[in-house]
Image (tube, rainbow, N blue to C red; front, top):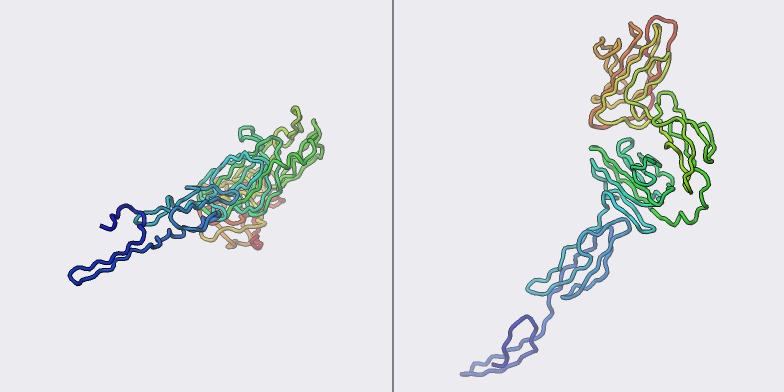
Length: 389
């Protein structure tokens, strides 16, 4: 034989002219090109080095800042009967929770910029942070920033909604971010740039940071030196969550407020005994929570009038029930939703019970109710609606 062929290597061209019994054959084996591997593409939010797909060629992948590569960082085009890559195309994912020890980088909410998942708790441990984007379901999906680990009980900020927060600085060399989502609406989430370089450009701290003014509240006092004290108070209808008085404390080279600055919240239910006051739906003026049962009981002297200053409730699903008496066993004056409200409601006693029920679906701003007394011997409700905020 002219040649014996075996294996997968290409033989050199072989030419043979054979004549036997006037039958001639011309055999020519020529070199040919192997089919290349298919273009595997580039992972979303990532990049690729290499654009050749022949047998033995290698492609290298990496992800944009804030994303983690899930899969092989290198793949090779394999030979054989069928040209395939040594591994599938990797993915670039934004994870739920991470720990960053580098001096700078990007931190993303899960799936960013796609919507984050429901029913998640994500904890990130980083340092100084600056918000690049922020969009969460207001009052329901909440980002909490802690100075150090959460067990230190030093909450720097609690954030929700769509406004981009200001930058946050820690007094320690670590910041913990906790992101909690509920079961319903999800949004694009957040992108945060973190860096420890900012620490070196700041002057050495000699006082506590500005404790700020709580939303829906006021602050009395501006001192930030060790030993200085400031007082906080909430607007009518809101309750102070935390201590009303905090003091600037120095421990070695650290300056911080003890305890943490409080916040003002619109509570879900309560007992009111003052001659006048306010009742707000939970989280007002932000959307009220899903699936809440909130009960308020107003007990005053005779001759009080109760007027509703604002209400906006999801039609057909979320209701405000008003009872003529101290509890829900009292006669029902009416159940109200949206703008279907009478001009006036009168009570026959010196107490009234309100019950708000929200479902697991869409929530709105809610209501703002003011009651006050006069010399009449009945309770009066005057209702009017304002445009939805």
